[in-house]
Length: 216
Image (cartoon, rainbow, N blue to C red; front, side, top):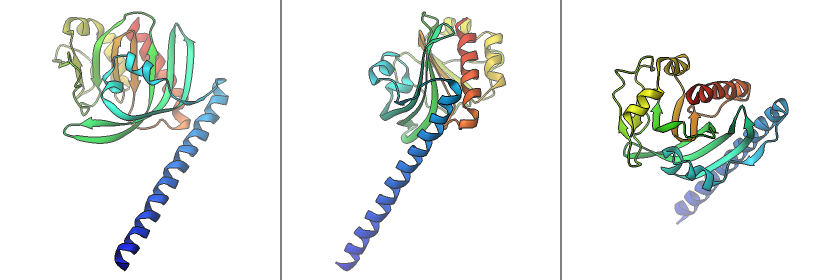
């Protein structure tokens, strides 16, 4: 009985410390990103876009995950002709037969026009195949300039081939860590992990350049 009580106490202490650590890390991240807002001249919202908006994009990144939380949002209603959302996103995602916790900084663009086929690009090929109907692995041999190991899943091969011209694939070749998903007027860009404060401006600039290049 004593061992059970001691074990319960230890477990409670470990759990309390874990919760405290998570809260402290999130608070530190919030303060870090909030300082960026002053250099951007933009207000940072505590929480990300509404779930209804994310689901309406039709992107597997938002549809095939659960326990999702968006935080630290920068929302630009007029961003070079687009509407853009930059935020941290935490969720549980499938990886093969397993599930994993994912946390990354994402850039979501409303391109204001039907510019993209439904596609998913895994820059290093390790991303799971979309479970949403209509996506198939595309043969990338005819596509010049893609990063080695990259995989694209798409339901409209001809339109995808028209999208990824050598000039556009060169955008990914210069920065092979980008992952991308598109559907109609929506484009999602992200790299694994949270973007450090010192790299946030560069992250935004690079994402905007990719969005402009893919929608031109």
